[in-house]
Structures are given as structure tokens and as C-alpha cells.
Length: 559
Image (cartoon, rainbow, N blue to C red; front, side, top):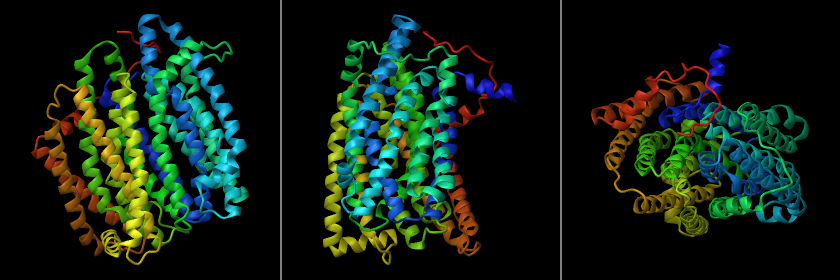
């Protein structure tokens, strides 16, 4: 048993599908733990001032992490490391990595100190709708959470090496430990320290995210060394390439900052409902989009660095096909089962029925853009692997600005055009629920993200793809499966509502699970009848006994 575990830890995962399945499984575990985390928050505290402060406090640390730590992220460092290993050897690559890590760690700490000092002024921008006491607590909670981007920034830089080594097993453990740390804060620290205990839980989780990767880095002989003698030319080279990417990511973070700021003016609980729905929707995004993006990026980087355009093109098309294969049917399933999903995952304790309906409606609106979020994750990595950071910057900047403008526009229309408001509330079945104006925020986000994905795809196709193969066929196969999945699940819900009690959690779970299972089976049947290549590829990847491997040396292949 121990040997099998060591085999998993030390194995290099070569195939994209096998690596994506591994990452997807562990992402599923992490997301389930994350859902349990959210359930505990919903049950123990519920949407209201405390959770509004907690979620709003994430925004500045997250922005710091994205705008500074991502300057030296995997998508930037991976091509540099691959080229140095191929051209100058392993030790030169380790020296380069040490210089980058040292420089950006110092920068991250410096900026964190400055943000700590100016946090009282920033808090008024994050949540203008908070009262003075809530703003004071927001300042303190945000200051504690500033430890998170420092730890996470270091961890993600180390994650570059674990992914380069194809040690995806270790890399996939980090988010699990992160969520465990947050749960520790909810269970043990919140009862004693209140919202500040939640903040310390986040800091503990970020520390665990970092610590879990260190043994693999050390055993592989790639441990960085902190140095004060930095190679400035190296740092300038990394910044020059990564700055457009970082600015592009920062644009999305700015959009979320503005959305949270708007939500703070929509009444108590609006920020909490928005974040609960957003976290639910990012569960499949983390399992599908991030898994394939992470699994494909090393292959794309190596193929582009070595001039293998055919391999690069086939890899990106394969990843996009799998994203379409999964995203469309799941989107239909989640929209139909939105109420059941929210009630089972969050609906207990302090989380009321009104909270359930409003969160379910937001969740459905977020889900509309799920395939777009997955597409953006993969397509941006394709651009980064090709050393093109300008295109994602321009597109992300335009679409993030569009999201902000749409949020204000939709809120205005929702408040001043009764017909539109009635249509949305009736469609989402929240006519008698207070606080429905928050629905405009996920709707704006989904529309903006869909435009983002479309622009990325059009430019990717124009620049790099000589043909798209059978991608259109794969799209329409998945669309047919999505229609069957959604329709059967919807019809089955009515039938099972007469069988199971809708007044208990287990009854709601069984209703949703049985209806969803029938819908999934229907979708699989459609895909099988259409002879979907994506379905057959996934089944073939599952059949491989990729866990039965011998221990391998932690050496980077240069072939």
C-alpha cells in the first residue's frame, strides 16, 4: 500500500488525457471539500454581514496575488525552464528559477506591507455600502488575509517545477490542503474569534498549500535558493513577457472587485449569495477547465519550444474538444437541478429558503457561462505557450470593462423596466424573493465571459490553427447530449417529486440524484449513438491502468 502511494507521488504523467483525469479526480475531491466548507459557512453563519465581510476581504489579497505573484506564474516560467533545460542544462534552469523566486518574493512582501498600511482607505472602495463597524472589521480581516497571497505566490512558483516534472499528483494535493485549512478556521477558530478566526483559517490553508509541495521539490534536486544577488536581466526578461498576462488577469480581478463593490450596496447578504453561487459554478470549472489547461500546458510549451506545430495544434484541439464534451451537458444538468444542488450543498441551519432560491438563480446564470470560462482557461494557455501574452491582455481588458459596464446597465434596466424585472424573476422563479437585483451581477459576468471566449477562439483560429478538424461535429454532438440530459432530468424531477419527500435533505438529494442520473444516461446514449470520439477517448483513458507503475527517477526528460 505504501509502495503504491509512493508510486503515485513519484510518477511522471505523460499523456494529456491521463493527467487531466488525475487532476480532475483530485480537483473533484478538492471541490467537494470546498462545497463542504461553504455548507459549514452557510449552516453556521448564513448570508449576512459576517459572511459579506469575509468574502469582501478576499478581494484585495486576491488582487495582490494575481497582480504580483502571477508575474512569475507557471504559464510564464514553464517555457523559460524548458528552453534552459534543453539548451544549458538542469543547473542553469535551477539558478534561473532561484533568481526569479527570490526577486518576486521580495516584491510580494514589499507590496503586502504597503497594502497593509493603506488598507483603511482601500476598504471604502471595496465595500462602499458597509457601515463604519463593518468597514473596521473588513480592514482587520483583509490584513490577516494578506498572508495568503505571499504563501500562495511561493506555492504556485514551486508548482511550476512540480508540473514541469509532471508530478501532477503532488500538485493536485495543494488545493485540498488549502480547503482543509479554511475548514479548520470555521470549526475551531470562528467560535472563539469570530470573523477573524475565518481569516486565520485562510492563512493556515495558504501555508499548507505551500508546504505540501516542498518535499517533492527537494527530493527532485530542484529546490531554489534565496539570494540577494539577483540577475536583473533575467527578472526584466520575465517581467517583459509576463506583464501583459498579469495585466490581463488583473482586469478580471478588477471586474470582480467592482462587482463586489456594487453588491455591497444591494443589501445584507448580497455579497454572500453572489460568492456562494460563484463557488458552486467554479466547481465544474475547476474539475474540467483547470484540469485540461494544467495538463495541456506543459505539452503545449514543449511542442512550441521545439517547433512541433502539428503536436501543438492537435493538443489544443483535443483539450477544447474535451471541454466542449463535458461542459455543455453539465451546464444543462446544473441549470435544471439548480435548486436541488443548492439545497443539498448549502440549504441548512442559517441558510433560509429565500437564500436557497436566490443562490440557485445566481448559480443558473453563472452556469450559462461555464463553457466560456473553461474555453478561456485553455485558450489563454495556448497563447502563453506560444509566447503571445499581448492578445489575452487586450481581450481580457475589453471584456472585463464590458462586464463592469453590463453590470451597471443591467441593474439600471432591472430597477427601471418592470417588464424586464418580471421576466427575469419569473424565469428564475424568484418572484416572491427579496434582493433579486443581485441576479444582474452573475448575468453580466456570464455574458462578458462568453464574449471573452469567443474572441479568444477567433484569434486563436486565425493565428495558429490551420484547420479545426472534427471540432464542429464534436460541438453539435455535445449540444445534442446536453439537450437530452436537460430534458430528461427536467421531466424526471416531476416524477420523483411524488416519490421522495421534498421536506428533507435526503429526499431532495435522492430526487436530484435520480433525475440527474437518468439525464446523464440519456446524454451518454446520445453520444454513443452519434459515435462521439470524445466519449471513446475518455473511456479509453479510463481503461489504462496508469496507477501500476514503477518508481521513476525525478529527472526531467529532454527528449
